Image 1 (cartoon, rainbow, N blue to C red):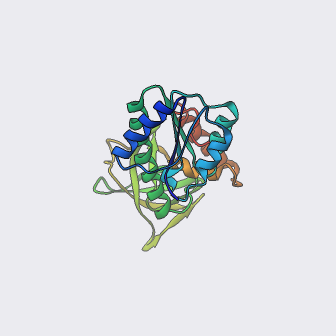
Image 2 (image 1 turned 90 degrees about the vertical axis):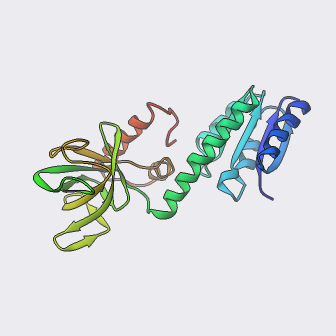
Image 3 (image 1 turned 30 degrees about the vertical axis):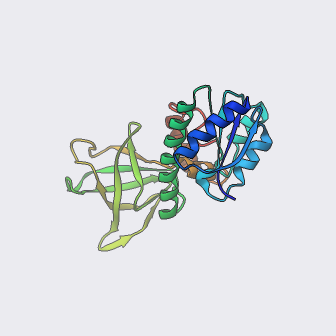
Length: 237
């Protein structure tokens, strides 16, 4: 059976939250009264649909061991709690939208490794639509489809990678290749000599924490964690 999990401090509160969720066709798999426990989080993780691995709590607390379970959840369990039902619904919608994008990225891509590229001087082959520039992979590895960061902001997406006349799906540390980048103009968003980072989805960051990275990849990964955790302290945990 599929559906989300809900909690409240009273029967009336539980019924009120359930009514609002039913009105927007969100299925409910488990509903109970009391504080959110670690067992509740584990029940949440058991949903086969990743978009149902969420527990919504109305006017009730989450216990410390449950907080720890959420933070270390490999299944991507999510907890939302508030004393205002409509705030819970808003956060649910935001999370579903974000999680849907992440799942789509995961289905299209391999694990995105942390990487840094240097735009080589005098190697601009096309200024825009897409920009085509020569780069050196300073750390990690790059793939077609990955997003790039400059000064903590996204500045485009890798459309293709070429070495001479050959197309490549991947370039490794030390490689010098020509990269086509959608969404930027050389001289505006990017410049020759810029150092750009490959951005990583949060779900991939959780996987990378368990993988053996090179020293250079680890340095870039730590930098990316610091960037994202300015907005979300628990990003990638």
